[in-house]
Length: 267
Image 1 (cartoon, rainbow, N blue to C red):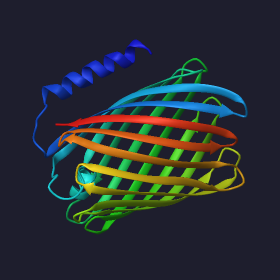
Image 2: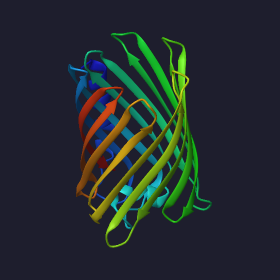
Image 3: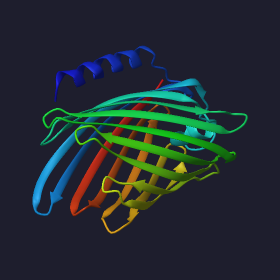
Image 4: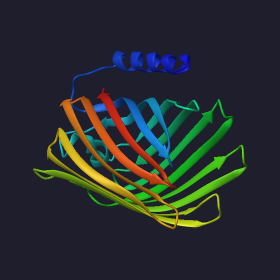
């Protein structure tokens, strides 16, 4: 792993610890992620590891008194910006930088999002960037409908993919909390084929600190592009969380088994 990643980790952790608080409500969240994946491409096997960090800063304090802790920002309609950086160690070393802003209006229920990421695969000279824009509306207290537009450019081959999606998210805040998300998408791929997809996930929260769920992504096309996953999250303390995800995917005869560990703390 390169020194640049360690430098970013050190600066971000120091900044976060300098503001650390034990209060349940929070105004920023620092996260670290480790992903390891086994890949089987028609008999050719390989492994990749990804390490990433991010910090999400909210423009006002997030209320955690209602519903699952993991969905507090959504329930509170809290606006934020996020900075992230990750590296992938594999056959081709890759750096990924990300910046995003998520604006949510408490009164009208309008939501606007903008997410930009830049990927540089240094050993292969491959560079790409992705821009995702979204607009949505809270149609109920904890139910949002949103539209997304995504454009990913591949600079080495002067090509791009575009995707349009309609998403619905709902969080239940009763004695046993739950969350449901679903989306329908249409993509204009590099081969100029239109590809439709469906994604669904659901989680149940027996307590505000613990949740478990599963989901799937399915491509409605001749090409295989399917994924199923299961996840669990646990807040050891109101401001400290660990989460694990296991997924199995099949994309154009490339099978991938991935394990993800996320750790975050709130300030």
